[in-house]
Amino acid sequence: MPERDSDADRSRAAVRRTYEDIGAHFSKTREYAWPEVESFVAAFTDCGTALDLGCGNGRHAELLAGVADRVVGLDASRALLNAATERVGDEVALVQGDAVELPLADDCIDLAVYVATLHHLPSRDARRASLDDLARVLAPDGRALVSAWSTAHDRFDAEADAETGFDTTVDWTLPGGETVPRFYHVYAPAEFERDVAASDLRLVSVELSSGNCYGVVEPEGKRT
Amino acid sequence: MKEDLMEIICCPLDKHDLDLDVTEREDGEIISGELVCTECGESFPIEDGIPNLLPPDMRDEAPA
Image (tube, rainbow over all chains, first blue to last red; front, side):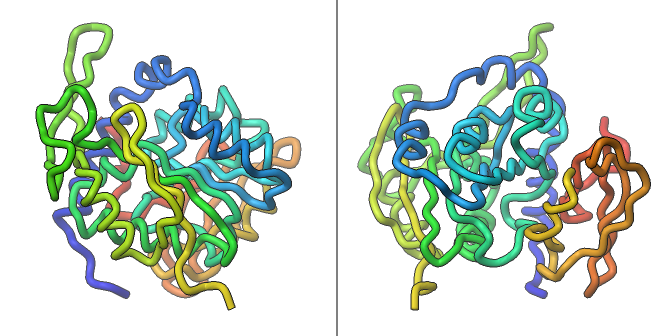
């Protein structure tokens, strides 16, 4: 078993706890699927098993259910999974799990979306390990869409052409006025491409849209 | 969870198969029970129909 980074594990637990605190409210503000995800998923039909990694309330798992026989929605937060149960519980198999240590068998996923989740992992090692584990679970001809917040987003002053991004904290304000901090790693687009390229995934295409990096990826070296 | 999910889930730590021990079933769904790794013996609960396959150090027994 690889040696585990206990600091990063504690921080991942902290990110999970954040979403346990805000999940019910957060999910009400995440009603609609993102258009970039809709157009990615719309290119597929008759997939076997699809995965929504970091499924939140299930809004993208719902899209996958239209093109796949079986859909797994995985999230670290039970509060978000409870929201997903109400929304897509009949058509999506929900699993509580960690994006770095996926509880899924090798090669079992034909189509995956990993949207707005990678940037919550609190170290580069954890983000890299997560991309590697996604490659492990993808079938040899499987495809995935990976997105992360980028420095090109309007809310940051950072230069979009910087070589590396930065860590930051973005507060979530609950209806009562209480704020809950959330960790983000904001990717420089060049860094996003570099991290994906360094992982066991191969970048098929990449684009910047609405301040996010979107990469279409496939597992590297699995085709015979 | 439905039992056919067993085809694709595994231990998050060592990726080995899991044994299923059902406590409660309802309309073909497994409502509660336990998943135990056939290799390392780590146990993962199924709670209200959702398997909790978080690595043990990311769980907290009593959420704040």
